[in-house]
Image (cartoon, rainbow, N blue to C red; front, top):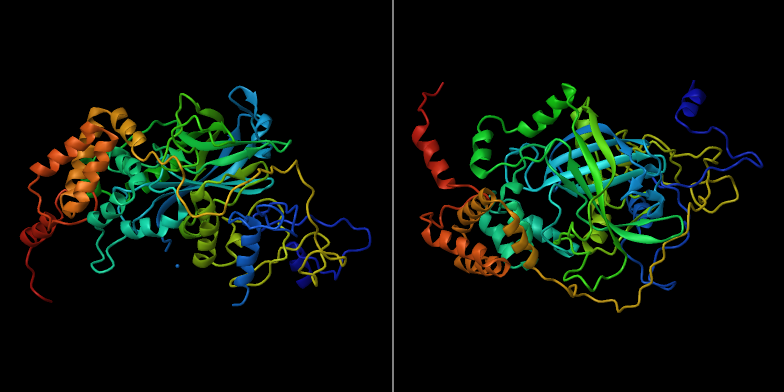
Length: 539
């Protein structure tokens, strides 16, 4: 019985592979073939190493935890299973021209997926009507291992450098003394981070409160690369476009809905799938040649910027359908773990500073939150065969033996029957770097132009709601913060700054009436609870 059980778990009972037996290829825990297990990726043969050494970071971070908490961000989430169907083309051309990633190559090719939607800054049981970016993370269970496309509903972000991510999130989390989210703290950060003006313009408009998860867009936000069989690369951005249409809420509408159902978005998604009304999104990409593009007035790797649709059109590459609800929320949604470094062959990193930082942070967070063996859980485990030398760690319940692997050998290289490096699927993409190692901003910051364009592209009712929400929140902020934000909005668009300035001049809201972003009157809520509540005798 014991022998049969070991064999059913894919664990060989033999001490070593028989002579001449084919060894299985070495993979990562994501199921990705490892073609070079000897060398870090460095700038030149002597280094320095780059932070995007995903295979090394996965390997060493697991090793660090071999001897024997709620998400910091994206705590509130909903999820569903589904399928992605490839079109086989991009912009009317065979997709192989741009990428050798197998899941895209054939028209009609289907890949299982799991999607987790979320709110970013609030806690696990917070209302889904709160003003906040929404997470949009998709796990593709491809034949080459998992691919995680981790993004948000909005196509840009507050910052362009991962160094600032902890500061950004700290400003959006509750005050460490009062435990209340503070609009003043948030705008204190934004006012001192000019590139955040564009994201603030989206966040405080109706785009900051999607009506539900089914009718919101998604975006990878970061810039990635596609690599073809010849080792040629292009820059890409990913966008999910809902075939159900897009719907957003004003602040007043969201507050009314919150009083009736603060789980409305999770319930909407679950009920739609249960009823057979399967939501669909088309995956589109924007493609740009892999260079610095001096003709643009911004850096294409800057996450606070949009790529012009006129210059870089949306090109459909496939469709995703969500058709199955989770059976157990905790096992499938809460323990689902995503990382921006989880790429398959044909998909690559760009030099996007946010992406480089997220690549370490996301997977390391999962090891801390779920455990070093989080990839053994069914929701996270790739459907491709896994064969690694990683052993032990908290809650390990399976060993990733390859076929014919000698169980005594948990290192590589070896002549005693261990797994071996995989053959390459195509030529490596080898960009050339000639620069000093520095700490400095990108050259083309251009922090306000696109914020102004976004403001002017809004419909009248969207601009009205934006100004109302900004004034309500900024009214309780320090005047120095108000003045700096008015300056930034004016640099984006003169009308934009004027309306915020005039709104603040007219407001009767007290600076003592502090509270969460967008809240119309926090103090009124406190007073109302006192006034309308009913006395009761003790029992």
